[in-house]
Image (cartoon, rainbow, N blue to C red; front, side, top):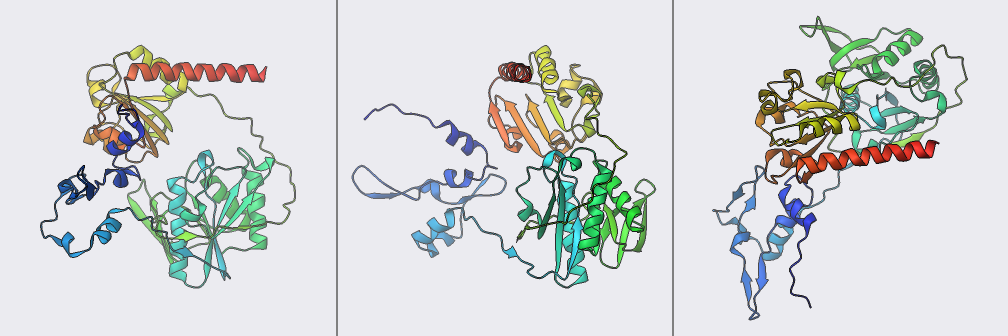
Length: 412
């Protein structure tokens, strides 16, 4: 047998990342080991536990000795608790939710709207069910965890892209067949506002917009740039703001599929001509969905700009990079700059000051490229790359250019 000690890079990465689901299991030291003489020895470093802040706590009350060794091992092992299943076998009524689903997945705004649908059912009482309606192809697999009791997928090429007229026809068909008690839409520019207004005009209903709190009796809407609240009776159609309700996170739902009858074809006066190419540098940071951000660890700034251009990402920067004159003040990310809500945020050479972490708190996926495995940005990130920033940026640029060449070759 070889005496060479071989490292496990994946295990080391999990031990550095306290947010990884396997961190607690791998970081837990063994309680007992058998020495060379065959005697069973206790590990003194296994005393205590790691708290939420990452600091080790010692059991000074000696409570651990009151339980058996088997019990301690069971307590140390991370338990995968299965959420209770919420089931509605015979729904008395439905609350329809039409999510935006940007990129084919439920956004945080969509999940808040689904949470508001369950809040309406709890307040109204009865066996109500949440019906989530989607259009076209999607990549979402978490409808059960998001709170969908029933799922109605309306498929077809005429519903792809920007097709508000055809989608409104399909929702009108849902109204005729199911007649939901409430219709809920995200009040957003991604399509929820327009679709909710079109359906309200079709149904002859007066919708409530910018709703941030609602029950089965009254709803409260924002007005006058958020400085005024308007209270009115809850209508059938609600256009809800972000954080209108807590998303579902303590139960699983069935998400049983439902079928819709044939929707008659109607001529459309709107034609989707595809997306318009936009310069990523002209996109404001607050509206950008893909941001490549630079910090003090960047040494090759021309390489950074070339990589951002190849990726089609909006450029951002930390306060240190802005103060040093490498980036304009309008590109500063953080509590002292711009709060961003990107779907993907790549932080290159950023250690992660408190103000910067506050500014990216609403980003869905954070990727860190840094040489310091213990910095706060690495702990915050969902994916971390411990390497030199110049090498990573150059490799990214080459991969993107090679991928584009393959696409052009396949198209030819």
